[in-house]
Length: 192
Image 1 (tube, rainbow, N blue to C red):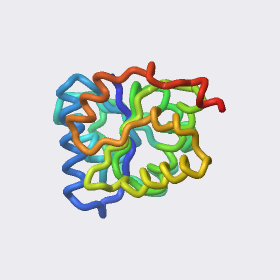
Image 2 (tube, helix red, strand yellow):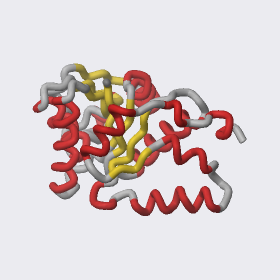
Image 3 (cartoon, rainbow, N blue to C red):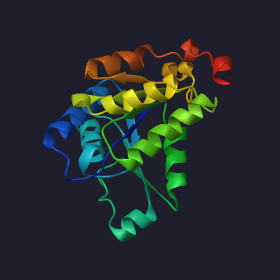
């Protein structure tokens, strides 16, 4: 399985977050999975890439050329493959198309945007891939509250909760991905 991991590229992230992300990536790689991600070498992105490489997995980094030119992100040059794109949209499209599942690790605005795009595309029936939010250390508790509030106020269909999972443990994530089936999604209800 090719897994797309979203997460922050910041080098200011506390080490315990990066360690959790590295450990998950290591487990996934040792289980035979590979990674497609944003090509960064620091933060959650770098931890993901190092974990996959150390676990014997393949790593495909995708990065816009202007990131490199302007020094926005340091590239993980040990990737098995690096694809350079012209735009952010092209970057996301490559990652979305190449992967079989998404894992959202702690991140900032870019990570939120990537998560909501993958979720929206799934809601619109453009894909049926697994989406997991890795809620390490309760990082995404407030996001979960927001989504539930949006449902409660009628802005989001309750069926949307079946489109992703919020999990706190690495083993839960591995088990969820291994057992994942899009069959539990009632696509017709999402159209209402």
